[in-house]
Each structure stands twice: as C-alpha cells, then as structure tokens.
Image (cartoon, rainbow, N blue to C red; front, side):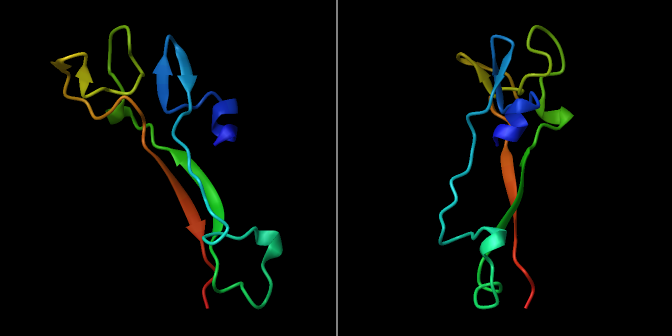
Length: 98
C-alpha cells in the first residue's frame, strides 16, 4: 500500500492531504512469497499480485470545498447521500492452476 501513498493515492483526505489508513494484513498461511514457491507447495498457496484503491469518479465529491474527496454518507448529523469517507481497497491474490 505504501507504493500507492508515494504516488499521492490515498483512501481518505484530511486538510487537503491524502492518507492511506486502509490496508491489508496477510498471514503466511494464506500467501507465500513467489520466490519461495517450489514444486511441493506451488499449487497450495496464493501469492500477492497487487492492491488497488478504488477511487472512481462516482465515489468522489463532485463539487465544493471537498471536490475530489470521498463522497461521505454523513457530514456531522446531516445526510449527504454519499458512500463513505474512505475509498474502498481490494487486492488480487493469484494461485497457479493445477
């Protein structure tokens, strides 16, 4: 996720600065480093491929002081009609076909 942050991509904005609070924790039992894959475990393990910050235009505030920020559901106690104050994140895990 740090690579996204270095490119100026974040999941939430605060005071005109992007932050990247939303991340993943992957345990060794789920993934294995591709360099460690051998003939015995190559079909039993996932490998991390990439992560994505889903920041499509319909998730962004279209105008005003917060243009481009995530389109929030609420601002204080006022319903704004948006989705969240964070952009969603997802990742791709790959598994070699057997």
